Image 1: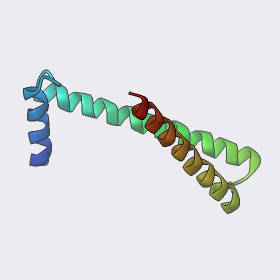
Image 2: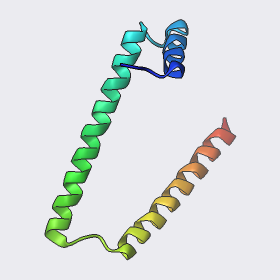
Image 3: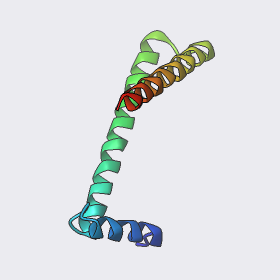
Length: 88
C-alpha cells in the first residue's frame, strides 16, 4: 500500500496539533468518513433510480430548473452568513 506523502504530513500535523490521537486514528476517521459518504451516495442513487422507475427519467429542463434553484439557495445562504458575520 502506498500513501501520498502530503497526506502523511497532514495526518502528522493533525496529531501534532491535537486534532487526532494518532496517524492511525486520523486515517481510520478518514476511511470511516469515506465509507459513510459512499453509503449516502449509494442511497441517493437508489432513490433516484426508484423515482425514475416510477415517474420517468428527469428531463434536461427539470435538471436545469433544479440547478437554478440550487444556485439561488446557495446565494441566499451566503447572504445570510454575511449578514450574521457583519453583525458580529
